[in-house]
Length: 216
Ligand SMILES: O=C(O)C(=O)C[C@H](O)[C@H](O)COP(=O)(O)O
Image: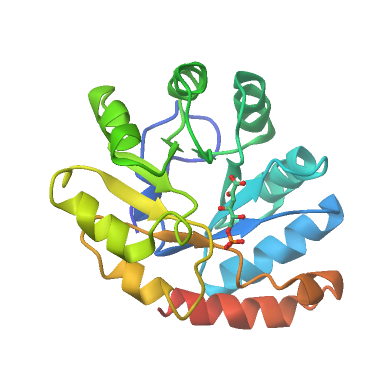
């Protein structure tokens, strides 16, 4: 795990999102009050890099709370679609940004934000467009539906300089196959946060699943 920058008091130093942890939990927070115990369970289980998706109204408060109250967590924002969301996420304390796809407008905003980011791609042309712009680390989304490990292996031949965080449809059964690929730095997924466990606030269960994921 490479060292992320200090969370405050220093200018942002670029670090590799792909180097934080082999598995990045993708979190959809319905109730911001759940964010801190949920993140504590993930960190205790060995998963410090946490992507909170901006899909729910609770997300900015959740990011703010985790950034302020969970030592050891490196919280980022996912489902970042607009420049406004980039600004809001970083203001809330997001230390990295993830998007399902990429546009020129979004890329410019993410570059200007001063934190590392993973724009989403699912085709060779999209990878090439980002490489042309100097971006080498990307989210491969939706990983399973877009071709899974076979597709990533095929990209590694002509485009070995691109490295990926595949996300979407990955579970503990398939994560190791992705992690074994030379162009994969980490995988994203929500399998360690089953809906019923989160609804029941069964953080011990989440911590157990996180520990299993951290050991993959
Ligand atoms: O909306 C986004 O930007 C996302 O991050 C989508 C996520 O990658 C998937 O929702 C996680 O995939 P699952 O592990 O299949 O749940």
